[in-house]
Length: 271
Image (tube, rainbow, N blue to C red; front, side, top):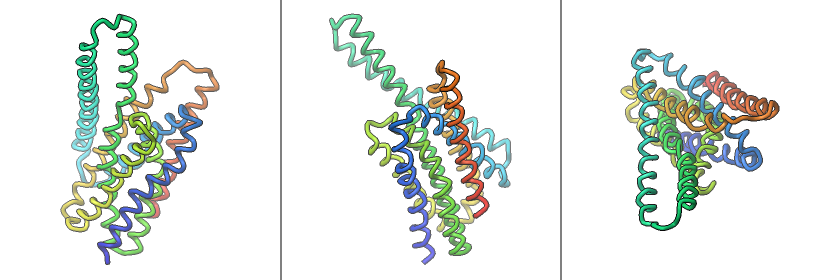
């Protein structure tokens, strides 16, 4: 009975939050793309700094080790992006070498378009990997709550679902830029959400031994969200804008931070 409850709770929290975020976010994304980029940056940063990292540092894990992991995670995602850009640049160079006689203008236009495509690809894998690690940690939390008490498990699953909705709105904005269609972006984030169930199963089987590892899962997920926000989203917002547009950009950034902070605070209190 407990195992079944854990499976239902983790799937509802992990995948349900993605679909709710999609319903809320896609309607706004079509009309307010730049605003949604600001909201996504705020949501990712707030998820890392106001939810995951405080929870990790409240544990018995050493601060030096956690900061080292955070730094290592940022460097890892930087190298991951460099490898991805090098791979696509190499493919482009090979294909372009076979197109002799096309002229300098075509070369410049094709290279510029490909460079823009490369920029749009960054951040996608970092978000998915971070989501998967974060979801695994959420699954462990939900499993531990269900093992302690069935009602507490339901509250924990609802809390995870609630605080993941604004965060997944930010994820979907990032994935919309790296995927060819909204459906593909939704499928990728949903698959990352299913890792919550895996975390629940592993947590149910190995709860005592995994409890000590949970802070490290939280910090690893945080590093991916911080990297994507600072390396991919915020640079897209660094444009010369009017005072009104700049104020709107800052306001939507604050909305993203406020949504995650408020919902995470309520969820943490309920848990």
